Image (cartoon, rainbow, N blue to C red; front, side, top):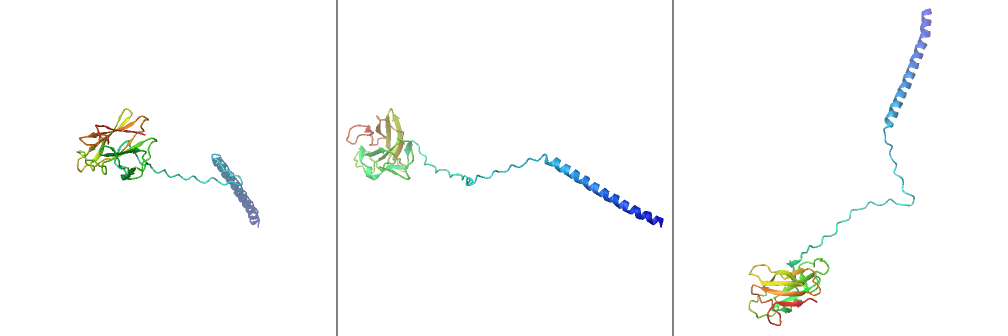
Length: 210
């Protein structure tokens, strides 16, 4: 009887002690976890909130990359293989030779493609022997070609020759802006008849640039 009573009294005490121990352990664990989380958070960088746009405004649209402008045709001063004198402008300016000069966009010129974009004042020059009446020795209208473009002081010098059969011919050139006193001088080479005035006489053929 006595032994059983003691056991009955001890059991609640043990259970109560166990309950108190679990509660204390849980509180200690919670305190440790809270302390660890606090230590970890103190190293975090707070995120910045993006401010909302003012009322009544719209966010700026993303800028699209603009397409590059089309490349202009490259041009060089000197002889031009895709320039010729239009048939309607082929009138004798020198002996056995038609000569035209002016802005590259002048309708007297014929381009294989569109006229190139050039610096202001750049002048185009084109020649043609085909279609020009001539009875001089050495006249070969299909072989007349520009062999050189030179400067002599303020003058622009065009050297014209008859190329050999089968070689390409050059009928045009682009030259730097001439001065107000410039003259276009046409000289012949290799016995060609083109370097003399259309009215007759000895060369060279000189054309005043207007």
